[in-house]
Amino acid sequence: MDYTASQSGFRQQPSTRLRNSSADVSDGSQLFEDMSGSGPGAYSRNQPAGPQAAWYAGQSFLSDPMSSLAMTYGSSLASQGKDMVDKNLDRFIPISKLKYYFAVDTVYVGKKLGLLVFPYMHKNWEVSYQQDTPVAPRFDVNAPDLYIPAMGFITYVLVAGLALGTQNRFSPELLGVQASSALVWLIMEVLLVLLSLYLITVNTDLTTIDLLAFSGYKYVGMIVGVVAGLLFGRLAYFLSLLWCCAAIFVFMIRTLRLKLLSEAAAEGKLVRGARNQLRMYLTMSIAAAQPVFMYWLTYHLIR
Image (cartoon, rainbow, N blue to C red; front, top):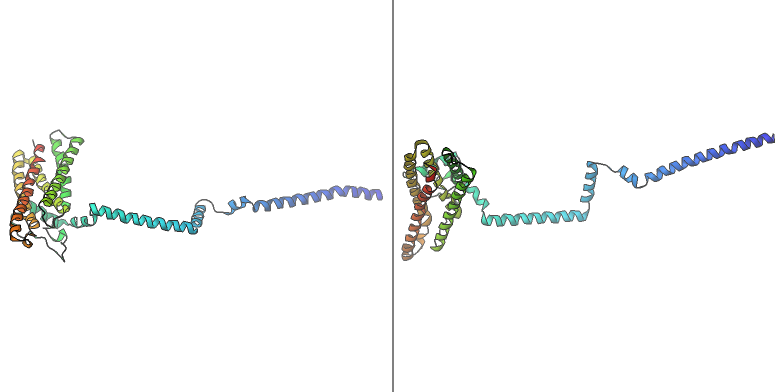
C-alpha cells in the first residue's frame, strides 16, 4: 500500500511538474504576447499605412504650432514676392493697359482695315473719351489697337514664307531672318520716334504702345502688296503697294497731327509757332517713313 502510494506519488510528480511547466510556458507565451503588444512593433501595427499614414502625418504636421507659423510666414513671403514682380513687370510692360488695346470685335476690325486702305473719305479722326478715359477700340474706330498689328505681323511672315516658297528659296533660316528683321525695324522706328519726342520736348498723351500700334498698321498694306504681286504679277504689286503707301501716309498724318498738336493751344504764341513747325516736321517724318519700310521689307519677295 505504501509502495503503491509511493509509486503513485512517484508517478504523479512528473505529471504535476509537466502541468506546471505547461502552465509556465502558457503564461510565458501570454506574457511574451503582451510585451510584444506594448512594444514598438505594436505602434507600427496600430497606425494606418499607405495614404492614410501620409494623411495622419500631414495632420500631425499641421497641428504643430511651429509648422503652422512657418506656413503662414511662407505664404506672406510668396504674396509679397508676387506683388513685387507684378509691380516691376507693370513698370516696363503695362499688362493692365494691354487689355485695352486688345478690346476689339469683328465689326471694329472690318472698319479699321477699311480705314487703313481707304482713309480719304473719313472725316472725324478724334478719339472718343468717357470721363477722361478713352473708350475701348471696339466702340471707336479711331482708337489705336494692337490686335491688327499683331495679326498683321504674323500674316506678313506667313505670306513672306509663301512668296519665298513659290521662288524655291524657302528655308526656316531665311524665314526667321525675314521675321526678325521686320521686328527689329519696327522696334528701331518706335525708339527713334520716342527719342525725337524727347529732344523736342513735346507734351503729348501719345504712349509707347500707341506708337507701336500706329507703326504696326503698315503690315496691312505690305500684305496687300505681296498678295497682289503673287496673284497678278510684279505690276500689280507696285500698283497696290503704291495705293497702300499713300493710304498709310494720309492715315498717319491725320492721326498723329491730333496727338502731337493737342497741347499747342496752351503755349504762348511764339513758342507755339516754333514748336508747331517741329511737331509738323516730326509728323511728316513718321508718316513718310512708313512707305519706305513697306517697300524695303517686301520688294525682294516679288520676282
